[in-house]
Length: 143
Image (tube, rainbow, N blue to C red; front, side, top):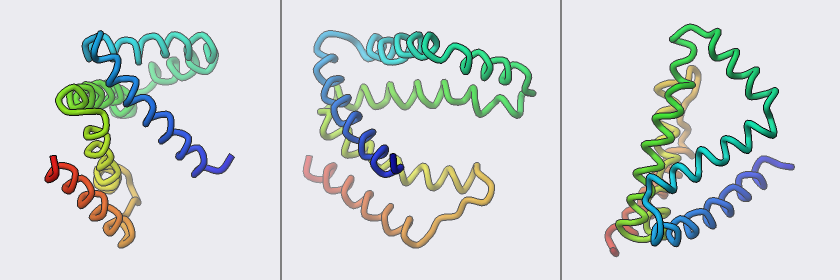
């Protein structure tokens, strides 16, 4: 399947996920939602892909600190980003939080240049980033 169809599929699922979260927050805290969206899927993934996961975990354990640090950083970036998003949804609405959160590609571009060797930002990326920021500004300004 082409990458762009997978990306659109992801966007559709995440759009639904935001709405589900908004409803779930009527009944559970962000912390419980985080638990339900991480621990339970992790157990399912571990059960289905046991061999791959255990091989990866063994490889991680064999790495030195410099190699393994980015992998362990996944936990912190995912947890903090998720909790910030959940509180944004609670603070306004899923629609508004999503419209602001969608500025993340700008930060992907910036952090890619900083942390990944050989990545550059093109003129098209800059123009796209400006358009995204303008959209986020309109959402904030009108609300």
